[in-house]
Every structure is written in structure tokens, then in C-alpha cells.
Length: 360
Ligand SMILES: *Cc1c(COP(=O)(O)O)cnc(C)c1O
Image 1 (cartoon, protein in one colour):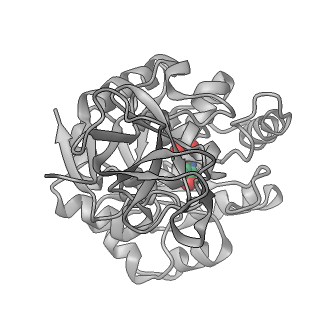
Image 2 (cartoon, helix red, strand yellow):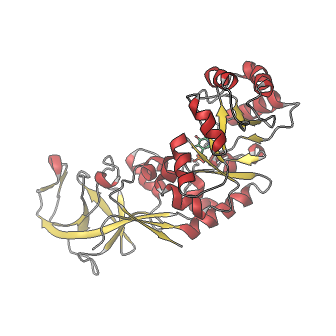
Image 3 (cartoon, protein in one colour):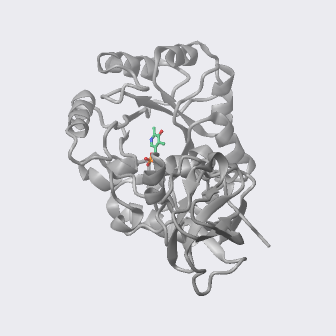
């Protein structure tokens, strides 16, 4: 019997890419595949996204893994590179690099390279994580343009801090600062992550860089993918492996963290934090069995979770039943809320013990 399993619906993925294009019909799409394609499987997801215009990853190793997997599209390194020897690797592999600080600029200026780098100059308009300060922007642009190692088609980028909240004024400020900085330039631009794509049409530049929404999940506060006509790509399931009875007053699991107020049947589900399910999911977090929700009770352990089946075993509930932890019938956004985190983290954290199945 196959236990913890992640079904990855590649047609839903392609459907979501079409939706992305409906949101931003004028923009090219760089599909963000960092962190093992948000836990969905880097190379398989990239292959299914053959209609994207480029890929984006966080680390050079992820980009090299895509090349090793046979993918040939341009790949953007969202943090750039951190050692001079990686510049030649970037050129040889058609990686486009972000330039976000003085260290990277000097590295580029000082190397002797066999070709020209395609660069994205990233400006910090308010996120205050990476990016050149607005007052440095012109100087960086001029110096990149002057470098023999850099292709003159320098592209321009910024990143939003609060785009998931459409009532937050910060995004408008960031947009205004960005357009003021680039005013006279005709360079290609890229601003929007998924939240920008969905919530801020005025941020759709020449390029967009959606991640989460491609996987059918909403980046917006208190919304789910279905609210934007997106389809969840991952369905995380396992099996019911035991049904037991506890009497009123007895406790279940580590730390005796749950106590039965009446005689109760308990379902034991083969899923735990060893599969990437969040240990912080509290009592009451739902799982889905036979299209009905059942509440988690007690602590999530490494390999198992207990659920409350009620005072009698419901019709149709039996050992071997499939249990959906999140997916099309149970939004991962909702599980994230219960667990006090965001869907990004839950998806990324699915572990290699889980059996991945790709459905075309
Ligand atoms: C991860 C990331 C994205 C994609 O963000 P989503 O919210 O998943 O769409 C875009 N840009 C940068 C710089 C990122 O780090």
C-alpha cells in the first residue's frame, strides 16, 4: 500500500500558466522554480512549463540542475552570483544574473570573461532586502553599461514587500519610486511576483515573475487559489492505517495533549512531520476522508497523526481509506492558517520520503 504521496497535476499547472497570461497579457513570464519548484519537483515542473518564456531560481545549483535535466530556456538567478568563478558559469549556461550590490558590481568589472553577461539591475524601492539604493541606481547602471563584460541590454527589476495586501499603500509608493528612477530608460522591466500579477495590474512590466500562483495557490491575504480561478497542483494524501477506540477521560498521543470528553473512535493517519506536515497544526486542523472533514487531535508526530472519527465509526470509513491532507478538496492556504504559517512553507517542506507521482 502506498502511503504518503504527492500527486502533481501537470495539466493544472499548465492551466494556471494560461491564467497567469490572462492576468498579464502584455508581459513575458519568468516562471519561478526555486526551492524544488516550491516542493513540486524542479525538473518535472520545468518540463511541463515549456510555454513559459524563462525560468527563475534563487541559487546557481538550481539553475545547473535545470540544465542537467535538459532544460534550455534562459534562467534568471534571482540573487545573482557571489563568487567571481560563477560569472563564467553563468555565461557558459545562459544564466541571467541579478546585480544588487557593490560587491557583485566590482566582481563583474574586475573579471576577464569570454562573452557578455545578461544582467538585471535590481533596485530597492522599499523591500529593503536586496537591491541597490535608489540614489545609487544611476551610478550602477552607468558602470554596468561601461563594463566590457556586460551586454548593453541591461534589464531593470524591483520587488514588492506588501503586494499580498491590496489595502496596503506601500506597493503604490514602490511603483512610483521605480517609475521615477527608470523614467528616461527604455530598458525591459520586471516587478510583479504572484501578488503583483493578481493584485496590481499597473505593476505588470515587460516581464512578470510568478511563483506560488503557478502551483494553484493564492498569495493574497485570506484568499485561496479558486478565488482567482487557479487549480491546486499538489494533492498530498496518505492512508488511514488504524481505527481505535478511546474511552472518556483517556488521552491521545505525545504529551497527552488531547483528552477524550466521551468515548471516541480515533483514526490513525500515516502522515507526520517526517513527511513535511507541520507539527504546529493544532487540534481541529482538518483532513479529508471520503469527502468529509475530520479534525486532527493531539500532537502531530513524525509518522502519524490521529483524527477524531466521532462516537461511532462513520459509514464507509475503513483502514486503507485515502486521506487528503491538502489539495483540490482541502486548500493548503487553510491548513497554513491553522498551522500559523503560509502555504509557501508547507509546499516547500514536503520531504523526499513522500512518493511523487506526476499526472499528465
Ligand atoms: C520567490 C520570488 C518570486 C516569486 O514569488 P511568488 O510570491 O511565489 O510569486 C518573485 N521574485 C523574487 C525576487 C522572489 O524571490
